[in-house]
Image 1 (tube, rainbow, N blue to C red):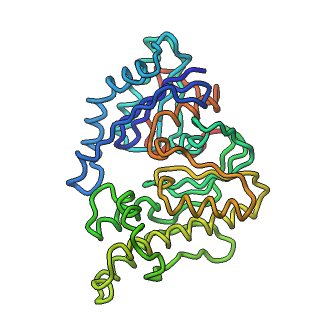
Image 2 (image 1 turned 180 degrees about the vertical axis):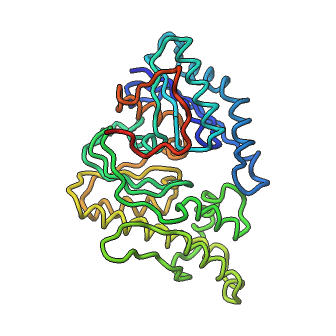
Image 3 (image 1 turned 60 degrees about the horizontal axis):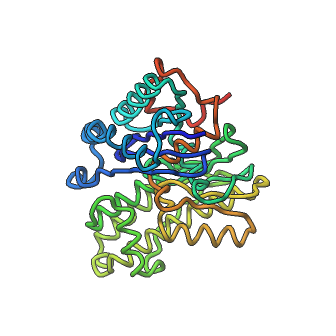
Length: 336
């Protein structure tokens, strides 16, 4: 199928044209960092207004870059949730209008499902089921058992902050600009990851859940000490990053030993982190498990992953353009 993807769940206005869920003929994305930077985080009202201003041009740009027209498409895929309600409404309303006017099928995709299938775009890699997905972003940190395109089950998640949120908040403590995750990654390359022994959350018993609020708080208190004031920010960033990566890989390893997974994928915005990518690949090699990581352009929110998920999930996510509603609290899986 040839699908137009639309993604507006947060602050990236993204469109793409994807063939057969594998090849991105175009991938357009405009971030709003400059609009939110002075607030130190995303302002929902600003985000939705920027989507409204940018989306029509982004759709046209994606079509032109792919050298296709609406008539050439086999359908429209859009993020229906979860996300910021105002941002979602803009994308869903636009997708409904396009699908209805062009008489094309409409596919409502869970944003997180999109991230899980992002590693298979422009990679030449096909998913081998069952595989384990480590999904790490600003809003979510989850381990997902993927037994098929429509059989996805959460096996672990964070009990408080997501890893990406902890990155952004720690970056603010260090005086780094927004968005903080990439800034910490860059700063940490000049630091010693063993300089400070920040705490690693260890779940009791067989629990696989994660927690990242404690690491962030430990950084705050450390900065208020004499030792903290004497330690370079590069060492603090590297030590913080190492603690987060250790927790993520530890849970991944524990979960992988509970079922016969043949592969693992790393996805979500934090999948762009260089230390996490290195640790993920090393873990997979040690365990003899095939691994996949999206291209950098498909780690952060993008529309190609939404089209890729819709292609694989097919008729089960097809919906009526007259009745689809944005759902900011869309359950991870609505399949039965």
